[in-house]
Image 1: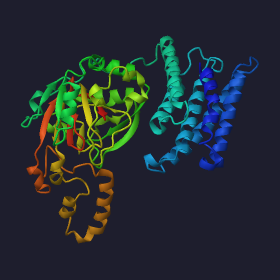
Image 2: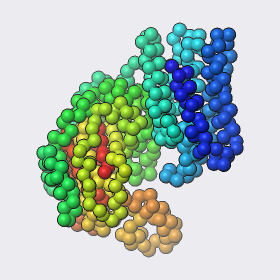
Image 3: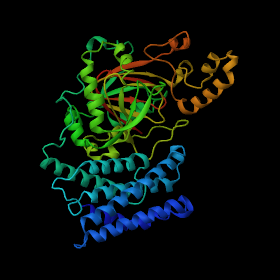
Image 4: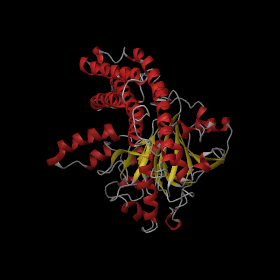
Length: 483
């Protein structure tokens, strides 16, 4: 199984070496990569030699894992040395190849030829999956044929784990989901926001009608489309946590945000397995919800324990099995009119948003038109037109500078902070939308808005550069489509 994948990997090495070369990565890392490849080649050749002992093969596999791990650490540091978009391709490809080598070493070491156990330890196989997922998340599996190879390798590793689970009575077969098959129904009706300025709903508008709306004389306005995703398998399948975890794979690594919202000082990011995310942030959260206070105190109370949110991640490229449960809406195929600073993506950009009740996306703008499909659960959404920008106090704005004038002691230091904020958070408002401090942000009270409670099966059109604030009213799974 792993020998076949490794043989395919060997055939692609020359295709990547023009980028992963001494002139780009330097002599030392390229030499170490070549040495690791030699170990893999030797390991494959010896695995077919009946005279080779399992001890000898295990030692070679361990050496391959160690050498690859050193390369992974080195290239990861180089990835972090640049802004994400500016990382030279050589470091992405070096990280990719090192991660694949490590995963292959772990997989081969667990094979029956090397392992003398009747039931092999599945933990190295899980570590190999994590290595593959890091390759997909951190480097996009960069390089010729690499992404297809990584998908194949993950499938092989998962099959191996499933085979061991079948013969091992102590193996963990299922996440502790509490048998929840009504995901998204944990809405507290007494705490729902009152909708004063509703967004209009349209049932399956024609493509021409939607295009005319988006390209209207004064620009498109938000609308809710009903009936557009009723045919998705996800509408039924994703209401069950076991199905989500089993389909995605319990050992798959995913990036999550921890904290109430990304503008908070305590907010951070980390990698966890899908099993860990569901058990620690979805199941645990739901069980504690039954004892929590209602309303907005719920959101504030969760700040201490940490809200976990799988947010703005292309989960469907990383895990194609989940992609089969949804379709890209035809409405994404219209041609929006030209606008200043609007540059449509080459392809529709998909992102997953999966988390418990109380997750918040602070008010911000996106660089594209957006269709937000609500698959499971409900969300409160408020939107402000671009014409209201002067009242919304975005980070680094003139309003913020005026607000902080007069503090002579910290003026220079604060000026530097504002410049950094304008770069990183220039598309984000400082206002706590549902609890505004009107002493600090007085003009916010004048801003006009529209709002909705987005229900399962509904799709919200968010026009380019419209400000939007989103809070989950229940456990929620949404998919956004930027076009």
